[in-house]
View 1: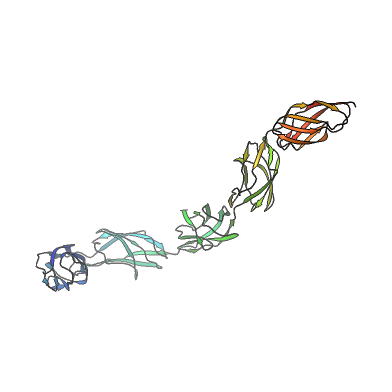
View 2: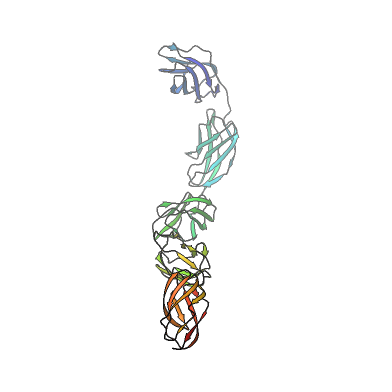
Length: 420
């Protein structure tokens, strides 16, 4: 069966030919030619058995569109009309200037612009983005100086309008904030400088950052991951690549040990923290409560004043490298209530000492000293409510008994030495 042509789109074009058309029908497989009247179409592409694309030949009037294949020539009365279309006319460009590197969008206004086959900036072709009868938008090619912009359609080439290429100054960067961050990246870095508009890339060493915002004087980025100790940050725009500024990658801190790892629930005591990557410590927290008086001794050691708190908590250290995580098996910090004595049994004994005295009360588990009138006694902490001490020798009379823990001294209870 011969090919069948059911439609052609568009149905009209200029007498010079060159209009891209789509012919729809059936039986196109193996087709050899397409004709517009007696004239052969060019650039014929058999897209499928039902579709052909081609460029119209030159012609006049209204002609029949036919397709010829191995089995014959189509006979349907599908028509294409050659219309006399005026040559394109340009009236304005917006903007009328741009970077020598090109790539910016230019809007061309005028008339008879449909079917544009070429837009030139001087000798250089632009990339056509949109095209209507009165407006074309293009991506400008690279160039220099002042050039003429022209549009070509099947009806001819337009008048020229002037477009001026402007050299774009290279970017410069003056500061980074912050200047350091974690090796894992992901933090926001602000880059200040000049001529930063249109940044095409921001590099931290060889790694690309994600650009979040961009003005002529400031760029914010999400920093990429990177290894210690540092990487040079550069900004690239159509004007070139900036000077470098150093950005420091800081490994996350670790907390390995605390001394002491017990303290009063009122806080205020000094705690030494041992770990690694502690040099740039900016904050220390005890279970979410900020410590004060941070004093960095070395990359592996610092001291702080513990805040008030309760229970057993995790101690974390924060640096530009991030916040520490608790290593398995590491000690936590435990808050202790002040020791309280409520009873001594017995409450008297010989001045030669040696008697077992039971101290009753609360918060006694971590007792580390017992004194009778300031004289240390040997003791054993039995439970949180009981300590057994051996009275030291003393002089006849009454003295104060005190228990001490990392939370401080207890209240006093009287103990009487009897003369022997």
